Length: 469
Image (cartoon, rainbow, N blue to C red; front, side):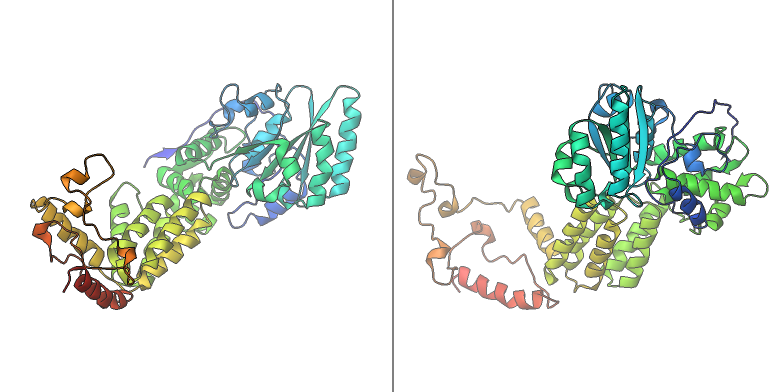
């Protein structure tokens, strides 16, 4: 059985520490409470009682995994961390993406002192105390970096208390938030800061974080053998959150009796079963096929089951959203035109909000499509029209429908005799629209399901008027 096991000796350094969110694995709440209570403390790398996620926090930029779009040479964030930048920043992104890590690296910037506050516990009094301390330090040439975690939890008054200090660079503010700062941070503070958006880590990034923790002396120090299946499962359940992945690894290792961490142990330790799902293999195609057929068959419960399997396995939510948009037209169509609107809206939520919140929109679209009346009219009508075109039934466009917006068009008879429907009281009138050889051909055949029960008679009436019958 393939596995990860290593022993690497590295020097122990210092890492910064303010939690930018709660650990997610069951059984770790006590650790979380202890860690949050001492949020302003920067634990040392050899603190064996600190959580694995804290011990493995990168000590240098070279150890940072992901966020390369913000850490390129000459970028504002890199210059700030290296001690040459002077702009305050708002770090915005999902939990476990490195906001606290980047803030802690600032504490090592040359000539700067580091102070950390959590908006969960600090108020105006604490903010002003740090600002007063920073002002005194400036008199002896020392600049202070003030890190505020969960800054969106600060009230307007608390945020306003920072303005003068940020404006006059008494402190260099580094604030972290999981919410869009455009909505959660006051405009004056927003305008005085760089807003840098962090992205969820890729599966490759999470795997790098885990393998490093398995081998590193600050982590598991090569004392545990982690099977490939277990590593794959932790990567999947991490959801792009490095801290969640390390917490799951730590909980699993602590439960191991023989130094081996397999997928069954991970399942028992984090209370989440491994979903047998390969995004590039049979399971991917089998589950999405079953999902599509459950939607088509109006089995909402089965559709929700397969949706849950895809979400739990870490399937790309954009892929799920694309399938839902297709199904809205292919399986429901004109029987309920609003199904497509719901599916498109769900895709927008995936794009604009992201996971895990977007899973609710995907669920809503799944329920809508599965429970909607079904019609294959859209598919059949397009197929019939395409078949005629492929068969060569593509005659000349009737002269009165051709473009008449150029010199000489009238002389050719183009656009002559066209009747404008809006000039008629009913908005519809008799006029030939298809080529001669397709006059009288019916492509769209409405069913009596859902909305098509209403649109069917209207289509019949419109055909009769337009064709002058």
